[in-house]
Length: 299
Ligand code: PMP
Image (cartoon, rainbow, N blue to C red; front, top):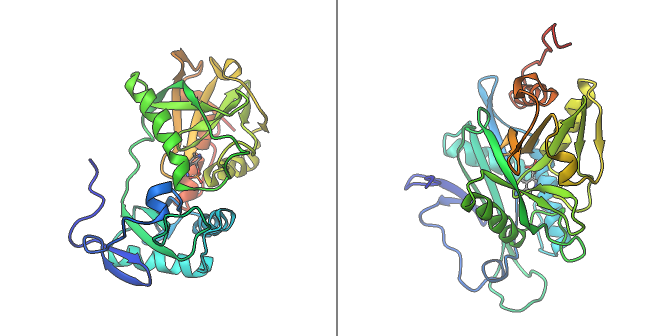
């Protein structure tokens, strides 16, 4: 089990910096009982001798929007949130880190909208272990929450029960992750990342509507533009994706992760020969603020 904190860890909580081991929350909140909380997952990297969050503004804009659509009161500005996060990282002496801000609600057992909210910003060391691995994935028997039932494009704690069920089902069956369909049977995303596949030099990904439209997904679309790689957002089925040239998951924590097979059908190309591989490399450069250059032979 990862060690998220120790006796020296500092978090921002409710207006002050406190020891994680001494911070308290209560047992009567809507957040605990109903999953009524919103959160973010952000990465910071060592950049030019300092510490830099990747797209911190975009993440905190999304956090504020998640609170707004779920009617949780939240008055921090994005600029304040960015500043508090850098201070939390600094107090913990962290550079390569994962940042987890969460907005919790006050004690209230009723089903009314949030009354008072509390912000916690937690962070811990994170160096990406996924990049060199390839994932074996399976189509989940669970579907993503219906977009008419939830704000699926918001990052709400309660939605993640669905993610836990899908991810654990895949692991119990010997796979690394789940591919989860939307309520209409089209490919949506994984338990905690967006999905792309590559076929004949074109990339495909699910459109907005039934997914959490990730900040990494948006970055991949940006990279495709920069590298002149055609990309199409469309609804597609597992039959279209199975046995394609390549596929990957992308998300803040995972970055860009190669897929080796879907439902035991391997992707056709060697990962290193795919356009998806170039995107993985370009993503790494972007988060580290390093220039990415195509090698002559592939340009
Ligand atoms: N989908 C889900 C369900 C997620 O939990 C995440 C991780 N936040 C993503 C997609 C990817 O989003 P992002 O790139 O913003 O991390």
